[in-house]
Length: 362
View 1 (cartoon, helix red, strand yellow):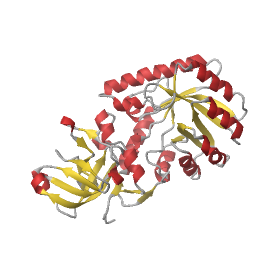
View 2 (cartoon, rainbow, N blue to C red; view 1 turned 135 degrees about the vertical axis):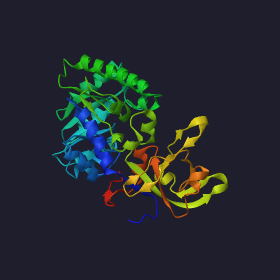
View 3 (cartoon, rainbow, N blue to C red; view 1 turned 45 degrees about the horizontal axis):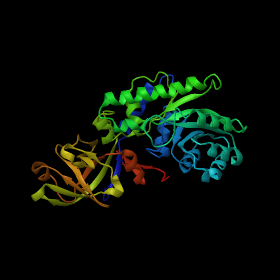
View 4 (tube, rainbow, N blue to C red; view 1 turned 135 degrees about the horizontal axis):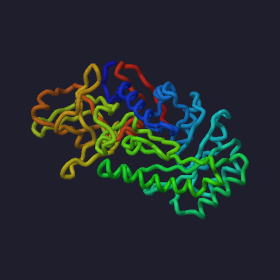
């Protein structure tokens, strides 16, 4: 394959290592990986080959996509959008559907309009403050549970949380503390309702804590997603090593400015997203630079990073020594800050054997 424009490269061996490592930790815990990161049927097959049968997605359209390719146990880990009830009804009847709710109104709508059996998770906010109910909202939780019991085709599965505040942690110790505090909240909820609902489970999912925690004692289900690719954000958090990052955006060099040690690449916000990390002294980085080779890519180049992006362009800051080695028309690689966003912007991946791996655009 001749690369002529921004192209997302994927290292399958790294993905397989990441998958096997996470699966090995999920002992006595259901491993329900989140597929919103890769959104690919072919990559999904790697999970099937590893014995994974339950998956998580972030939208109804993504659920439809994977259901059409043989997945029959699917959780939509997003507060259910009642305007998509018909799409849920249209899923193949053999698909076991799990939905996430945080209001009585949503449950009532499902009970009155859904035409199939539905499993219900109640979304709990353990400190991220994006979605979900605070665990002490006992009155609301009990009203939701009571409403679920009004309908024969709705079944309460358990409590679900995303420990997303781990992404704001300063180090791995803080991630562990967030995990432990959040897990205690979930376990307290389980203890409160276990006598009435002895089958209820607690489901958690975030890549930083799932990568750092060694055992998941007291957890019934984990739902990490970003771990399959990892990225610079996970690297900064201590959730992975650079050698675990399985994606690189191949970008053509279109201009060089030696007077200011800058390289211009064809590869901008529509390819990498505008996610960034803060380096020292408030300097932003939109990606690290690697050299591409026959077996993949090198370690990131020292003192070299994407310092600015516009829609199609990226600007790389580098050193005098490195800029002397680069010429217009070269292809260089960029490790993404956030692989979920970068992957979502691409139509497909190319693995290192140059074969196309297609994905949905859910």
